[in-house]
Length: 197
Figure 1 (cartoon, rainbow, N blue to C red):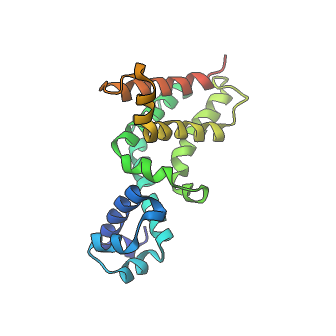
Figure 2: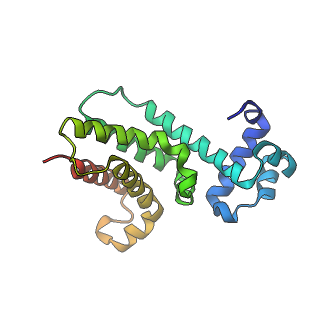
C-alpha cells in the first residue's frame, strides 16, 4: 500500500471493510457501515481509497499478500515438482481454512479483481511447467488453467462444505476429520491428475 494507506486509520478502514465485504458481498456492503465500524467519516475513506471498488481492491490486496506470505513461509523449494506442488496445495488449503473471510472474498471476485492473487497462482503454474519440462506432468495440460482449477476446487469446497456433507451422508457431516479427508483427497486428485503416465 502507498505510504498514506499504512497509517492506523487506513488500516482500521481495511479491517472494517474486510469484515463487511466478507459478510455482505461487494454489492451488499455499505461504505457508511464500513466508515462507522472503522471510526472514521466517509470522506476520509474516499480520500484514502477513492471509491468502494478501490477499497475492495485494497482488501483483496491485503488478503492476497497474506496468502503469499503464508506460502513463502513454507519449507524451501526442495524435492521434485510434484512433491512441491503437493506441499503448496496443502498450504493453500490450510490458509483458506484458517481465513474463511478470504474464501468469501474470493467467491465474489471478478476476473479483473484477481490480479493480487497472481503470485499464488503463478507459484502453481511454475511448478506445473517445471514438471512438464522434466516429463513428470502431462504435456496436454495448460499450466495456467490447471492452476486456476486447483484454486477453484479448494475455494468451491469451502463455500459448499455444509451442502456437500449434507448431500453425501457417507462423508459424515459431523466428522471432525472431514476437512482433512477432503484436503488429502483433493490434493491427491490434483497431483495424480496432472502426473505423467
